[in-house]
Image (cartoon, rainbow, N blue to C red; front, side):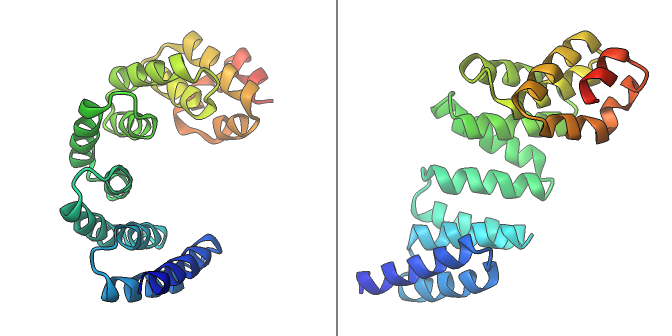
Length: 198
């Protein structure tokens, strides 16, 4: 029985990696008919559903998994991600805080939290989390860019340009992001900004 489930799981995962999400979901469902408490199938089905923008059913899968094991971190993180995408921001933030209470250094949870706080326009709090992450990962370009975004919204222009400059040194993708970012449009006449995005 277990080898059958392992084979099905492997083939579903291969389909998932090929971005054949609907086909992978069908196989995860077959596994769950045989073994309804299979956490890997529940998580992966949820993740595949989220890739098709079916966030509510993804959350349902994560919740089923969490009813079996309430401490399963992957399920919790994926649930937070789907909640963020559904704009269930306060619930997602509560879930982040619960996870960080047990383990304050969970990078992926901190990252979700800073994005949620930013969306809620809590820029000071978002900035604090950026700085906490950057203490351990000073070359995290995504967090540096997020820091620049919080700083521009707080009208701290020179600090914003400094963070943006560091992000662009890490990857040119942040130069492209900066060119099209609405929050940064107020810098269209700033020479340092124009040099950075050139």
